[in-house]
Length: 164
Image (cartoon, rainbow, N blue to C red):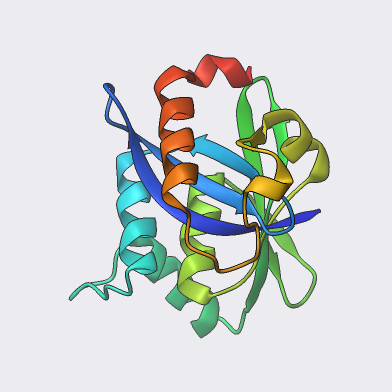
């Protein structure tokens, strides 16, 4: 398993499709996930610390889990099958439930729990944007302008079908 940081959500141009960007904490590898608009909004709001006046779907899910005595400990992007990513939400009692990666990450950023990616998923779908010595991959570092430019160029050329 590889622990990743949630870099944020970007829009792929010209389609304006939201792309969730995850960065491996120990290497200069990124995992792009194309997600829905509602999930992109939910993740972005949580990352920005915005608390809506009324709970969004993922806020409601987090509240429900807590009220029922559950505790999310992590989420894992566990599989990539025929171009579709699969995830699990992992609980303190060692149970887990299947989820879409976008929903799992939206919950993870709300509950401030780690996000993991299975090694084989990262190996297959992860993107190296530069040599390790050119990029700082320490957890919590902001992306440099060079990293952002390189990633934008990557997003301009990649298609969801490239992962199938």
